[in-house]
Every structure is written in C-alpha cells, then in structure tokens.
Image 1 (cartoon, rainbow, N blue to C red):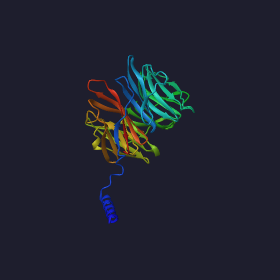
Image 2: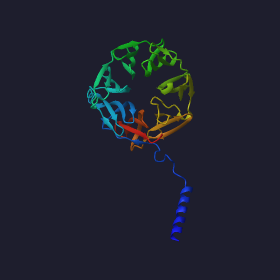
Image 3: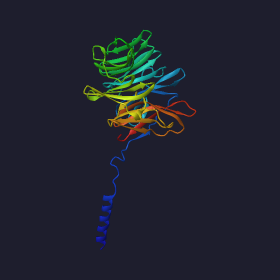
Length: 362
C-alpha cells in the first residue's frame, strides 16, 4: 500500500511539473546594466574614447583635473575590473588622451600635449609580459585636432591650422600631407578599414559629404545622404557593410537617420522613436543590433537605444543616488558585453567618472 501511494504521489508531481509554465530559458542570462567601479580620479574628469580588443582587454582614455590644468588618464579593463595605467611616457605631464585604436598587436593612442599632437604606441607584450612605449610626433602643430585613426600600415590625423584643413598621413616611417577634393572645408571625422580603404565625413561648400581614400587619392564617395543632413559617425563593418548615423534638419527641427550599405545599395531609415538622438557613439552590439547612448529622461540614470531593424527599444543604466546628470560618453563592444564610460554629476560636486556594463545576452 505504501509503495502504491508513493507511485501515485510521484505521478501527481510529474503531472504538476509538466503542466506548470517553464521559466524562460534565458531568465538567468537576461541582460542588465550594472555599475563597474573605477579607480579614483581627480574631478572634474572626462572620457574621450573607449575601445576593446576582446572580453578581457579594453582601454579608456581621457583626462582629469591637475594643478596645471589637466592630466592624461588611461584605464585598462581586464575582464573583471578597471585599473589605472601610468606606464606611458609623460603620464604625469599636462595634457589629455583622446582616440584609442588597435593596430595589429599594438595599441595606439592620440595625445594632445602643450599644443602638440602625438601618437603613443604600446607594443605587443613580450614572452615575459613586458611592453614598451614609443612616441610619434605629429609634424605640424594644429589649432584643432579633429580626429585620429590608425590601421596596420597607416594612420591619419585631421584638423586645422591658420591655413585651413590639414589631413596628415603616417605610413610607418614618415608623414605626408594629403589633398582633399575642392570645396571641402573641414573633416568632422575619419575611420579606416585598411591603409587603402579610409572614409571621412566632411563639411563642404555644398553641404555634408562622405569622402573615400582608395590608396591613391581622396574622392567624393557620392553617398546619397538625406537633404540638409549631417553625419555623426560611420561604422565600417565585416563583409563590406557600412552604417552611417546622423541627423536631418527640416525647418530647424532634426530627426535621426540611419543608413546602411550592403551589396552596394544604400538603405535609409528614420526611426521615429529616436527623435533627434545623437549617434556619434553608435556601435554594433554582440547581438547584431545597433546600440548608442542618448539623452536620458531620468536625471539619475543613463539611457541607451537599441535598434534592431525596424524595432527600437530602450534600456537604462543603474540608478545613481543624488545624480543630477548621468552622461555616457563612450561605448564599445567587449566580447558578449557592452562597456560604457562617462560622467555622473552629483548634486553639489564636480563630474565624476562612471562605468557601466551590459552583461548577459542582449
């Protein structure tokens, strides 16, 4: 009798289990933004750029307050924590670090110091893990250093001086000054896939245009941008895909547009939910969607847009007590996660650095 009762109880449990709704398979891996502590810095501090080689290596650049004005700031992510790096030449001298790029096994950073532009080069680790730093000085002092990009075999620095636009190219051994098409006033940004495949977005006498370097010369790429539009950023993606983000202005009102080229055809969409969001920090996330920070409607939390085809959704970073403004300034993909850095302004204090990580499966 006891044996029969045990069998009946087991059958009842099995039936209840079968009829009960199963929890979502990804419940434990559901993504969420979390706060990642940063080393102490002297506020006000700022973030200029962040780039990741993989889940266990990312670098963030910027500056912090110092008696002489500002001091360069370099942080490294090891997959678990951010740590400060002060091993580069001139780490204690006035200045700031800006764009960071990976060039083969090396890591290159553009630095601004006492009006001079420099490229800091960090070598690949040796067998014992040691690295060396070297400095490449930009041959001209510019009033404005607009942007920097580096790939194996080439690097570009763009900006302006008293004579106008300057496009400077480094080929590993020396510098050359490059011409741009007639009518180009200045370059707002530059990116590259290789030494013979670089792209820039420019302000010209006839409006915004996209330029292409084919290894021989800069030419108008004849990208069919929307009328009265500007460009915030360009993503050069695998398999030749290119994604452009920017704003179009009509009667003084802006709206965000996204353009994608695949197979030689450009497609443009105007996601209504984005309003006039700025897409300068747009990245392709590990889930294949486009991600970028945007102006938040919550004073104490950051906000991120996720664009997957026609669908636009939003997520928020962790709540920060007493925050007046939480502003992500740089975003990158680090393996299966996203890393964001920026500043959190707390009531009655100067802006402090903050870092957020989106884990799980976006």
